[in-house]
Image (tube, rainbow, N blue to C red; front, side):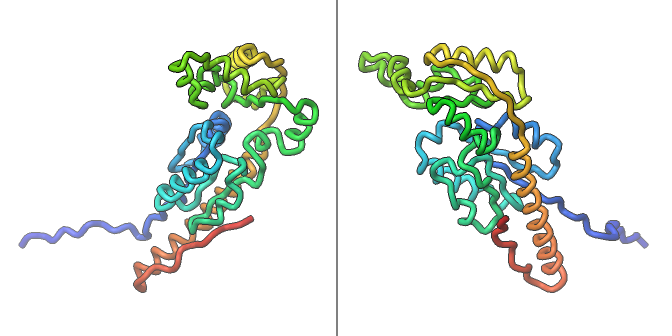
Length: 249
């Protein structure tokens, strides 16, 4: 009589890990890549071009679209941005926990708001260059601002770019301890030479960025716990429990 083979069953169901998604500006990419590398719960990372800052409302709409697409795949989403002129309150528009640092902009996430304000007081015309910006070239600025099309009308794109930078007087390289410092400094120096800026340097750390990333990890852990409870209830008693709503801090 043939034997009936029954697949072996685990004594306990496997617990699905929490899943954290990240959507961030390329200005913070070097720092975030280092911070995210040891975190197994980070399942999706999306970097958006810094040129989005030139059109704040378009940036808000783009982020909303990215969040909606990512939300079904993760338990929480960390936004590597500050308010950036158009993002205040964005995190409250979704059911999935979205953690947006309550900071004015990306530079303040690295320097802290206090030091950022101090540098502005020292020189209002400061172009800040963290590692994510230090390798930005004059040509990249021209393309980001769509100035290259001026060449078709017999105008010099570089001359127009310099006119847009006339209110800047200082380029401040922010050393956050990531990347090749000498190569980054060389890129910052070229940029300052192209736009007639005086190059200065300062140092910063990622503690504030780590703090808000920690908030996102906590939100993902809480949401994942609710998701598992819902899956367990669905398996035993029918429909799943309601999903976790917004998480605020």
